[in-house]
Structures are given as structure tokens and as C-alpha cells.
Image 1 (cartoon, one colour):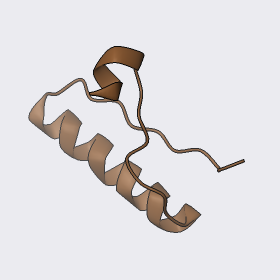
Image 2 (tube, rainbow, N blue to C red):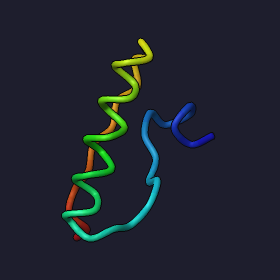
Image 3 (cartoon, rainbow, N blue to C red):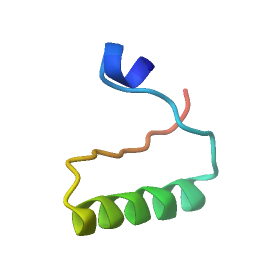
Image 4 (cartoon, one colour):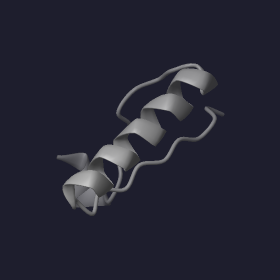
Length: 45
């Protein structure tokens, strides 16, 4: 629900390599299915 009210939400905490792979996969699948889903990852501070 946070993504709907605040525009973004944490979906998981992963190593950089795994996060990069997951974001790439999500972006590709969303584009393939025609969904305007956005995915990003950032380093924890």
C-alpha cells in the first residue's frame, strides 16, 4: 500500500548483483506485458 500512498516502497534487501538482476528482470517483464511499472534499486545508507 505504501507505493500507492507515497509513490515508492522497499520490496527487499539484496546484494548489489541480485538487486540489479531482479530490477532488470522486472523492467523487462513489465515492458513485455505493457505495464507502466517502474523499478529501481539503491545502495543502503
